[in-house]
Amino acid sequence: MFRLLLHGLAILLLTLLTQLGGVAWLIAQLARHRVLAFLAAYIALWAGAQVTAPFLGRVALSCWPSGAVQLTSPLYCALNRHYVVPEMRAVLTDLGQAMDERYPGTTTLVLDASFPFIDGFPLLPHLSHQDGRSADLAFYYRRDGRYLPGKTPSPIGYFAFEDGPTKCPPAGTALRWNFHWLQPLWPEMEIDPDRTRSATQILARDPRVQKIFLEPHLKQRLGLTSAKIRFQGCNAARHDDHLHIQL
Image (cartoon, rainbow, N blue to C red; front, side):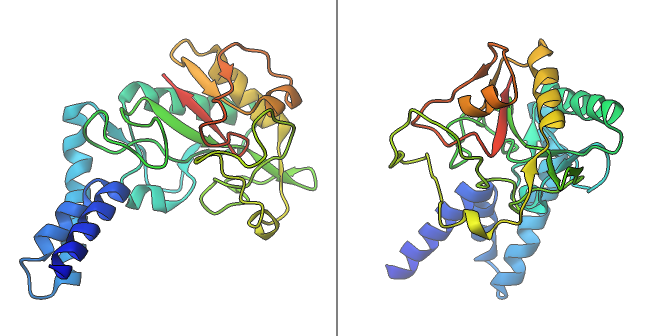
């Protein structure tokens, strides 16, 4: 019974993390060398998703670290969290090209997007990202006034917060993490205000983009005025470490 519970927990966790990992775990139980079998099954399912997801309405963002639009970390690719609807991929591609034209050598970094299959399937810990029509973007950063292409303080792009005034309770809520203990561990970088402002304005002017989540203190600090740029509320994750865009 205990082993069954462990297997059940493994399936649950792998499914929540990657959507396909639980299936790979089940397949691996039929083999003698289960670790190798799990890796082989997961790689096969991962590759299969790249081929089959477009027939069901979602496409994968490129996993290769080249071009004007890249994933912040290969982790997003490995965990199948890099899928979007074709319209979102077009929005991101157009943004990357526009930023590279305005600021040559600029790299636009994507964080979490969605899983490859099933509308409504949760992409934890997000409250959205369930239909391929949402994506998170890293801010653009600089050090000593010089832009740092493809760099973020956090290796995954999240949780390096820009502190500022807020009306939310100091203790936060279930998802509004502050991670004060983590902040001193990040390397010293600051938001590149020109690039971050320009990218947000480009997105706000794009008729395909319905809403952008950003903390109010950053909206004010960057001089942004579009009604599309909204506060996500105190019951959701902070958005002063990334931009959330939604079609």
